[in-house]
Length: 356
Ligand code: AHG
Ligand code: MN
Ligand code: MN
Image 1: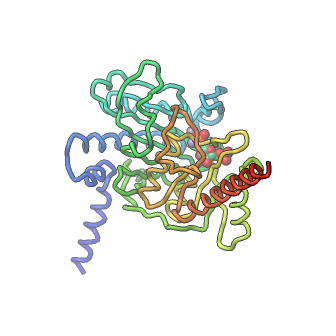
Image 2: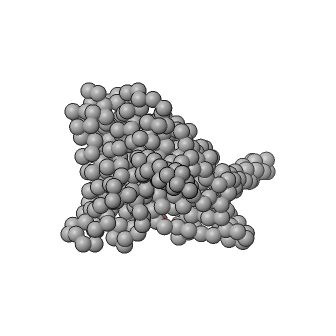
Image 3: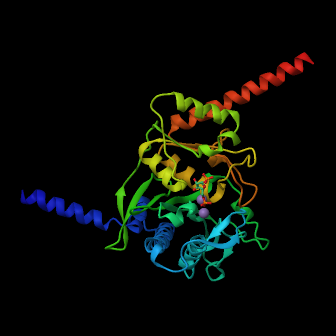
């Protein structure tokens, strides 16, 4: 009995001590400079998450936190005060870090250099400081998305051409979810692990290791308000789930929350292209690719509809991409509708060519 109690106590203590930075080192099983770098990088990202979470938790009580700034960002979208704040938090935490020379974000047209870090900082941080900003003013869940890539150059024109490579070049990726509790989910290419912020310790403590997404789930997560803007193939898929038993819709307006639900419970999240925006809304380098890296590590898939997200080579920093992400079987099912449509369009064209 005494032994069982001691064991339980030791287990609880061990668990409390499994902080994010320790977990990264454990995963790499060494203390090389690279491992120390990654651990320190994740620790800084965690600090950014804590600072943002603190502000969000008191947003309704503070002046100047909620609402718009009145500016339009490089994406042509109205900027919220929280977008700017969170963007600056990430810059601040990486100052004097010696780790990150360059940051690229949804909110900055060109990458931001931290010159004092550049002589030794070999990494670039790509991030979406606040994902789902429309939820900011109504106290619903939000996220931050991040990816770390090796930096292969510095270019004066700000095109960051070395970043225009496929998603498999990501060294680490993940998100912070600001919900009832704050969670950090990450992967360094060795599985997917989630941490929960314990406010009494001020630390992210391990919640779940080696998360595996189910091969199929009942949830489909998409903004059906765009139904008539979609290609017929996507409309057909949605008609299919409407008339097939066993599907249910969930859409929160913040992809981090929606994808987190799917990571845990299975299903599929879609943001397809529309007539006005054939590339959809989501940005490849700091939204779709990091989530794709994570979901693939958890045994799921992500696709543009015709290509794996992680194989897409962007042509520009803020490139958008259609996104279908989640359980293997569900992503493949959506793709099969797209494939079918392409095939029938081809055969119609073929027939009309023959008839001419
Ligand atoms: P962001 O706030 O970074 O611009 O991203 C919002 C994204 C994503 O989180 C969400 O799923 C989607 O946009 C919501 O868009 P709609 O309102 O068009 O559904
Ligand atoms: Mn976003
Ligand atoms: Mn954003």
